[in-house]
Length: 390
Ligand code: NDP
Image (cartoon, rainbow, N blue to C red):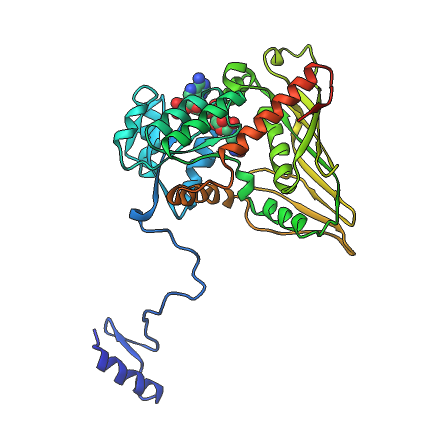
């Protein structure tokens, strides 16, 4: 290997065309490989492992395995250190693949309090279990990010918020759409006044529930699901439209049920609901939510005085679309970034909030607000669609 003086001399000679630049492995090469400074445009790099927030993922089901765990693979401020599952074989198999070596089940869950290598807990259980497992984690001294919808009832949500306060920990609800680039771009454009004054908002979300498919089965059982389609899928229209309309607030709500009453799938929870929020500004937000739509529906429209935004799909994992129309320009599709980044962005956003012990962008209070609104929708629908003043 040439020392630095020798290399400099050879470079000077090479520049003068006197000798080949590099001599290696007994052969002469024209160029030399040498290290350079960090690229000026380097992408953000992961924090050092010791500086990352450490997470336990609770419930290794469809969403946990297919979206949450891969989301940690892209996270920069966060890493998984534990799994909580009722299926030890599954947990250990996944642990071996993802570098997770600490395992809990639902019985020894509270002993997480003795593990200082868990800072945050991500609850990915059926809704009817959210309140219990959130409160137990908060009492174990962990920050908690809980999947949507926050819980079965508003009183459970209130108990979760009280537990977070009592234990001095942060509580977030996993409204991933707040971290999704297409929706963030729509929000930015609406806030910047690019649509003029908003005149009407419409949101439709649904899919066809299959009682034979395990992740759908519990969604049709009130004790585990809390509510019906509005809890599970309609909540995307509710929460996302309220995100887009920041600064405005609902003052009245009404709803009617909208599903075949003789459909055996919906003995315990509603199969569909059409709803309306009237905002303080006078704007109406109308939505539909259904377990009877086919194909899968995820559509939102924001109509303004000078332009409109259409999003279809609006809130999926990997494929959201934003079309602007009006504002003196031709109808056009707006690119905004990879939707798949929403999972890591949400996890890192919560890690940063937890580290600073400040509220997450989508705190427990937001989850409580949404459950209270859905409860008001059900009261309205039970009474035949009466308007409920909030
Ligand atoms: P799954 O049925 O696929 O998984 C739920 C997991 O919870 C199970 O695999 C099991 O994990 C655990 N569990 C514990 N007790 C029960 C029980 N009595 N019945 C069923 N499961 C139980 O559901 P999903 O992954 O679809 O949903 C989980 C949560 O994620 C829900 O809150 C849902 O609303 C939310 N979700 C959020 C989405 C989003 O886009 N933000 C999308 C989809 C779901 P184990 O075997 O490890 O014990």
